[in-house]
Length: 337
Image 1 (cartoon, rainbow, N blue to C red):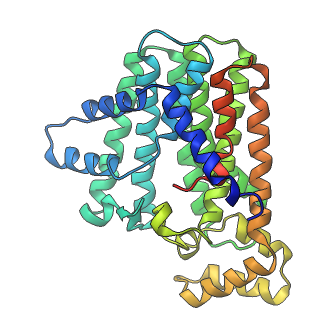
Image 2: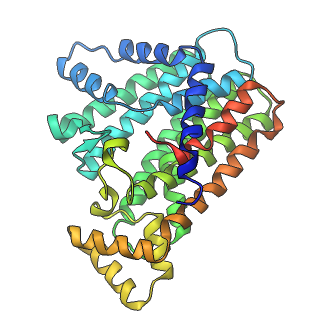
C-alpha cells in the first residue's frame, strides 16, 4: 500500500503519545460513562457494559480532550464530561449500525444484537443517547448542546443516505464523500470543536480545530473502507469483506467501477444488486481491485485529507499538544489496531 505499511509503528506511537499527554483522563472518561449508564434495569446495564468493554480506541474522546488541552483548557472536568458525551453518541450509533447491517462481529467479539437481539440493541442505543443528552444539559453550554445535537442528526442522515444508495455500484465519489462526511467525519469534527468551545477560542481557531477533526474523520473512514479488502480480522476485529457482503459501495469499488471495462462494470452492477453476495464474487472483485490498484488509489485519496487535517492546525503556536495532534493524522492511515 505504498508508504502506508512502514509508518505503522510511528502512527500507533502518535496515538499512545496523545493518551500519555492526557495523563489518565481516558480512564476518567471510562469511569464516568460507567457511572452514567447505571440502571435499575439489569438488561440495560448488562448490554451497555458488554458493548463498552468490547474494545474501541476512544479516539473521539481523546480528540475532544486533546483539542481542549491545545486550546489552553486546564481547570475543571468539562473536557472529561463532554468527551464521555461524544463517546456515548459514537457507541449508540454503533449499536444501531450493527442492527441495520445485521452484523455479528465487532472488534473481534459478538455484537450485542447477535447475543440479545435487535429490539434490545436499538433500545439500549437510544438509552445511551438519552443519557448523553442529559449530560449535555447538565453542562449548560448552549453552543455545545447545539453542536452535538446537530451532529447526532447528521449521523442519522448519513445512515439513511447510505441505505438509499445501497447496492449502487455506479455510486458517484461525490455522494460517497457526502455519506462518510455525515456518518463519520461529523462526529470527529464535533469532538475537536467541543474542545475549542470549552477553551473559549476565537472563531478562526474553532474553525481550524473543526476542519482538523473533519478531515481526520474523512481519512479515517476512507482507510477503514480500504481495510475491508485487505486487513486481518485478528488484528482489526473486523470481518474481512464485511462491507462487500452487506452491499455497501465504498471507495475501492467506486474506483474500480470508474476504471473497468463494460463487462467488468456489468459484473459489479450485477453482484451489488444481488440479495446476497458469495465468496466467489468477493474473490473476483479482489482481482479487479488488484488489477486497477484501487487500494493504492484509495489511500492516496485518504492522504489528501490527512494533509488538510495536519495543515489546519498551522494557525496554532508550536507546542507539544500541536505536535501530538498533527502526528495523530497518520494514525488514520497506518494504524495496526
